[in-house]
Image (cartoon, rainbow, N blue to C red):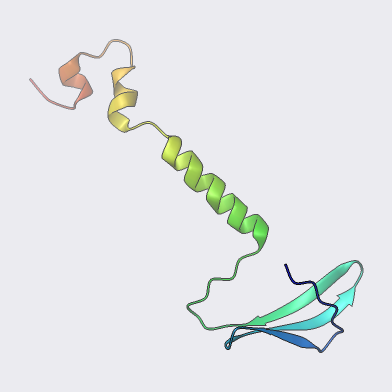
Length: 84
């Protein structure tokens, strides 16, 4: 991890095409401007964590067939959606 000290108006470059500029540093927070190509995804960490948690939850969900199998009172033909 690289730790830098920058003042408002100063910038750092990441590679050849990502520029991070310090806009302001006040009230215990820092305002940044990130200039990067459109194909570079830039997310706040809390959004990335929420997306990952949502993906994990979706992966843990049971398949619809498994859910139907546990419903009481349905016969196998009704569970699979077949009609007699």
